[in-house]
Each structure stands twice: as structure tokens, then as C-alpha cells.
Amino acid sequence: MEGRQRVFTMGKDGEGRRGIWEVLPSHTLLVKTRHKSGDFLLADSSRLIHATEKKVHVISLNNKEIQGAPYKWDEVIPITDRFIVNGTAGFIMQDSLILLGGDGNPKRVLLLDFSTKKWQTLSSMRTGRKGAALTKIDENTILVLGGEDPKGMKLLANCEYFDTRSRGWSAFGNLKMPIPLSDHAVTVCNDYIYVSGGWDGRETAKDVWRSKLNGRGSWERLPPLNKQRKNHGMVGDGAGKLSVIGGRFHRINREDIQVLETEAFKVDEGSGWVPQGKLPLRRAWKATDMNIENALQARWLIVVELRELGLKRPDIEEAGKKLNLNRVIITMTLGRYLETGSTA
Image: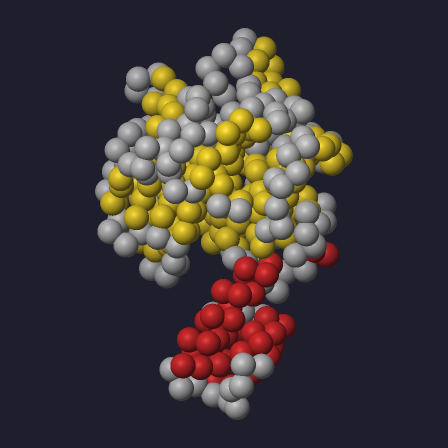
């Protein structure tokens, strides 16, 4: 994976230390915290978000050096609504967290406004689901795929999308996964949706599929993973390489086997998944990535917006500090903006 990409996972090491770990590029316990396989983990811009049962934990990685870890959560926000995080999916919309579905609230969708710490109920999903996977198609389209209907006790292959403008749910063309799955991983790369692993109702899967982003056409079956896995992460490096990280191999009436092997696949070559070594942990679930270049780009856009409001350089620096942007990022973003010809 590229050096400007950071990957995080819920995990436990050989000494029994549990928490949120950075596994690439470093191997660091960032926050000590208990977690379960039904918890939610997301890396967004410069912060990590972990949701479990009735709480949302948030930590900003700005101004936090690896040498100072482990840290405590910056914020612990209670979920005041009657909503339980268990098999729940989620995403970030502007400065809000959206949580959707789960075992006890399969159709419900909640919004947390980070600025006010208030919760709001949004339109329900068309299909109740837990263990679903989601990915962002574009800035206005969040696609949710598969999962399990906890009331009907059946796996799902159907998909639906959330429109961030109307805040409503619709079918995504004729898109339907080739097989029903839960606890699978999904990502987008080079105009394709990729699905890997998961639980198919009988065993943990190692199948990998892809389909065009437009929601039309059939699914293409790709070379399978070397290791069967669910509750894993799948990330792209922005250069045509996918990686699957961690997860577990579920066996009915037997203890699960933790999957620690990382595998990589180059989408343009199609030659199969290549082992990349094992994580130095005893378990690693729900891996998620943070692209540093994207984080810097987001801050650069903030600086541009501040500049367009007529603010000069000292004012932008002060505003940046209030937005929790460290001095290095302020300098880099200002430098990038000034290169465009501004004389501020």
C-alpha cells in the first residue's frame, strides 16, 4: 500500500492489549478500548470513529504523534435514541455521522451532528438489515449492499442507496449482489464496485466479485481470496491495488479462527491475490483506511473557502487553529493555495 495511506483495525495483540490499532504504515496501539465484532469503525479525514452499543467514540489524530500512543478518546458521545450499534454500518456526511441498521434496529437511520452533539432520525431503509456493507459512489450517493434480515432470518443480496441531497432511499438501478452475503467487505476502484468474503449462510466465503458503478450489467467473478474471511476490511490504494486485511473464519458450533494474513490484488493484472504477510496481532476486525492526501485536500479546500470569504493569511491561520488543523497542515494548505497565484 502507498505510504500516504494509513490503515486501522480493531484488534488484540499477544499481550492481551485490546483497542484500535494502526497497522499500516506503523504498528501502534492508538486507543485502548474494548470492542466486539458487531462494532462499527471508520477512519474519516483526520479522525477515527468507533461506535459500540450506545456510545460513539471519537479521536482526532491531528497533533498526535505515534510516540505518544496509546491515547484516550477525545469525545465519548452517548446515543440518546433507542438505537443499539450491533452489526450497524455508517458513513460521514459533511460534519455528521450516519448510522444505519443493526440487529435491534434493522431499518432505522440516525444522524449525529458533531457540532451540536445532537441526534436526528432520518428516513428508514427500504429493507431492514444488519451486517451490511456500504461504499460511497460519489459525494451524493452512498450504496448499501446485502446483509442479513434479522427479523426474517435470511441473508440479502439486494442493494439500495442513500441520496445525501434528498436524504431518501432508492433502488440502485438493477444492481443485486450475485449471492446473498453478510459481514462482507466492499470498496470502489477504477469505476467498479468490489465485494469480497463474507458469510453465505453455510460457510465463510472467499469469493471476490465486481460490477460497474452504474448499477447495470452483470457481476464478474474474480480470482478468490487465499483465505476465507468475514468482518475484514478491503481498501484500495488509489493506484489500482486492493488489499484485504484481517477478519475471521466462522465455523458453526466451533470456535472461530482469526485471519491475520493480508492479501493484495492488482485489478488491471487479474493474476490472483498475493499474500503480504501476517499482522502481528491475535485478531484484527473491520479494517478501515485513511488517505492522507485526501485529508490534506479537504483542508486545502477549507483554506480556499476561507480565502474566498476575504480572509488574509493571519486570519486563515487563526481560523485553521480553531478548526483543529495543526500548523504543518495550515502551512501546507496555504502553500498549495498560494501557488495558484494568490497574494494574501
